Image (cartoon, rainbow, N blue to C red; front, side, top):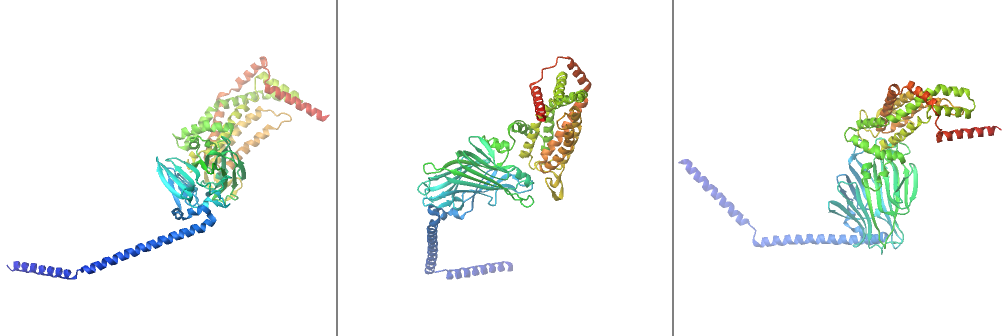
Length: 623
């Protein structure tokens, strides 16, 4: 009973407390007059804020107007662009799966170009940036009606970025008025290194002096992207196309040229290139290149300075040029796919060397490298080439074997005839009777030479090898250093590469093995160089040259030469010991002597006539 009483008292207490609190709140609520006063104060504050913003806006407009008026003295009508909102921004970015391009609002040109799928220097390096740190600029020098020269690189463009059919379209307008402007229009497609670049003007006929062309100046300092800056620099150059498909390049040191009907200019580095293309041929273009590396140990950032000045002509008082930019790899397959003669930028060699690379090496190595690791692909590629060349190697050895069999009779002729002309005549008769062509051993070697020179062009240009490792070489496109020297040796460098050493050893044994038979087969002719001494010298000179010059070359080329010499050595050993039978050759020669001698070839006849004329001239001089 006491518990119930206590609970009832508690409830009554809480109710009294709640009632007292409600009465206090009622007594303290604001009156209607106080509410109206507070509301009036808030409205007054809001009006003051609006007035402040209006004052700031008026001040900004006044400032812009004052700025425009002040700039008109230097910029003329283009002072309008300085007051645009774009003047406060730095870059406008466009990108796809392959490239990121940052376009500077001041100047309207590409200020940064980054390739997303390639690393600089090595696999752990930053992404390759063809344009960075102000190493490139684009400028058009505009001449106004008042005679002032204005540079677009110093003026602000208004950017408008849109997307049309999946393509990013960036319009950069340098305005002289709302409907008066110079426009750079960039169109970047998906998954493409090439972008459209249009240069056009609208309503500027009344602003600019349009009687003469304006110069579009594109300059770039090539930056290092590979391990060896000196090696990269030798493959960095200006390449250009002109006169409906012709192509040429500037020299490696300092060179300048004026080119008519230019259709593209490429600032090429070792494995990357920046290209400006024009669908309208440009007349009187000026190109220049300067080597910036004076000391490879100190000059380690920039390689060459490239400059181009392209006159753009007005048509009906306006500019209208359809152009393209390419920022990407110097990859033969990628460039060739554009069908605009860009494959000529890749230095695969001229004439037959270029044909071998384009139609044999590129597709064959591309096929093999799609199934095997690149080092293995080089070895299999080399083996296949040498097997195909096997019959030619056989012909060469067969000719050497025949000459070796005839050596005793040739020595007898040397002893018997002292008169050079008579000796040569009898020697040629012997060759003719025996059915032996002394030039047969040279022809196979001449056939193989183009393939060797083609490899010297192909492997340094094969971007597929870039940063691909094999055995101890971590990059087949660069040297395979196994030891860093504490000093630099002229021509050799400051490191030791292993593949060139192995290739030099292989070529030494190859020449040692083959020159013995060649010396025995070729008797010394009076008045002619001693081929024996030359051969002995070449046994040592060839490996030394391989060792020195290949030390800084790509290890992929050294790997190819190593297995090329090993394969040739193996094929020759097999032919000499298991295919060529000197006794059968001797019997065949003796049988040929009994037959009616063949008529001397035209070459033999001309050689004979040349010998006779030389001897006659020699006798005439003695008199």
